[in-house]
Amino acid sequence: MTAAVMTDRPAAYTPPANYKLSAAGLLRSEWTKLWSLRSTWIVLLCAVVFSAGLGALIASSVPSDQASGGAGAALDFSMAGISLASVFVAVLGILTVTGEYTTGSIRSTMSAAPRRVSVLWAKAAVYGAVVAVLFGVMVFLTFFMTQAIFSGTDLGGVSLAGDGVLRALLGYTAMIVYLALLALGIGSILRNSAGSIGFYIGVIMILPQLATLLPWNWVADVTPYAPGNVSNTLLMVDPGGANLSVGESWLWMGIWLVVTYGLAGVLLKRRDV
Amino acid sequence: MIEIEHLTKRYGKKTAVDDLSFAVKPGVVTGFLGPNGAGKSTTMRAIVGLDAPTSGLARVNGKHYSEFRSPLTEVGALLEAKSVHAGRSAYKHLLALARTHGIPKRRVTEVIDLVGLHEVAGKRVGGFSLGMGQRLGIAVALLGDPAVLILDEPVNGLDPDGVKWIRLLLKGLAAEGRTVFLSSHLMSELAQTAEHLVVIGQGRLLADTTVDDFVSGNGRSRVRVVSPDAARLAEHLAGPGISVASPERGVLEVTGTEAAVVGQAAAAHSLVLHELRTDRGSLEDAFMQLTADAVEYRQTSEGANR
Image 1 (tube, rainbow over the protein chains, first blue to last red):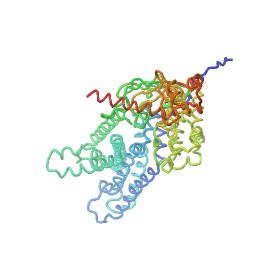
Image 2 (cartoon, rainbow over the protein chains, first blue to last red):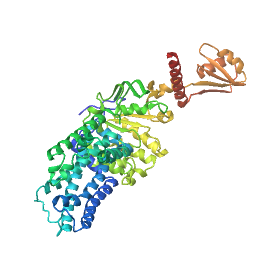
Image 3 (tube, rainbow over the protein chains, first blue to last red):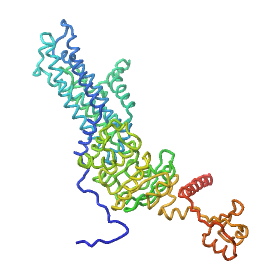
């Protein structure tokens, strides 16, 4: 028996010992945060509808006397919607970070995880995984659906076993995951929704396209390495004529993600929340 | 235990907190008082690591906040009421935070019930009133059942029932041996909740004392006398450190002495008294006086540097 000592000051309080901050906890937390917002469901639904719907629409409106057939052309038509859907996915990636800053919920988040950088990893991992699974399914779904529409034409009869077809389809999935992660990193750097979305659409998406119109040769040499272009090779059934080889494409996607997340991580540590 | 050591925080050229040092002990409610813009929020944000100090330290139980393996059980903080995504429900907001630490759903519903948000827990926070937002913030602070509570202006937006409730809640938490640190720009608010006071103005420490000492030390208590012989009484009271004013005929206001001394002087000279009363300066007066001095001090010192 312990003798109770009467003092003016109460005994020291001991907080519960069974609660611990963990990487698994942060992943579960980000999962909860992602799906508890209406915007996530709306944007992802739009992405899904666009990727399948636009693919089907374009596939059924291709004239039957289409000049060039083959797997490459077939995928270009089928996957047009997927490319467009990447914009939705990128915007949502940005919002998962900037939404926290604009609403102030970042203060709750960072109070729970004061080392901060682990939050960025958890966000990227959860969102990257969701996009990979969702578009892994959507890419193949769209492919089989459009192939059904194309059947009997020059664009039909493309098989997954065909040269480069499976790799290109996985390339579309990789591209959309890469752009989602890139956008999320940009959101973390800029912390502002409008600024980040503007930057993504202007600098990542449009600028490399406009750059090809410029008269200087070096611009044309550089543009294939722009963050928004490096994944292009992965989408080709026959990457023979591409500026970057498949290996270089992966390498540059890695480089841009390391640069973006390196900068995002340093800034996250240094800046006040 | 919260320890602030020589904390300085500058935002660009503006100094929000200026070489501030004090400690907040467990077991009592400590009030953090200062006018708006005095640096209270900045200090609190530095404690939970949201703002990095320009120089100096803010520690909780001997550690920097980011060193804790379970931050939410060490410190619960209510910083700004708007620390929640407007599109998320109160329940999901708490659940997302709970999951970082493996805190069970049971505890989430427990704090929701505790702060009285049971009926609106599933609604999106964007539609919450200021008071409901405050209650959610308090639920967040309590989620990890923490040893230290830091609450920035917790009564803002609460109705009188809510104010009373939070006073009792905080006193109860302190009585369990926790450290409770709450800020306010209203002295009267803190006087009813806190035992200890840390007062700052323009980012500097003005007082670190008990509420009682603060009032008696800074309040202008004075003795009011009504007497037909006021003029003669005034002559007999005059002395070093004592000042006597007569706001109207037959009325004296004496500072620097006590009612008993005035009464004795009157009796010794057989003067009639109609009224003898001690007016305690209000807490608000004491606070205003202290912060006004700080402002004056600051202005003269800046002038002297030029």
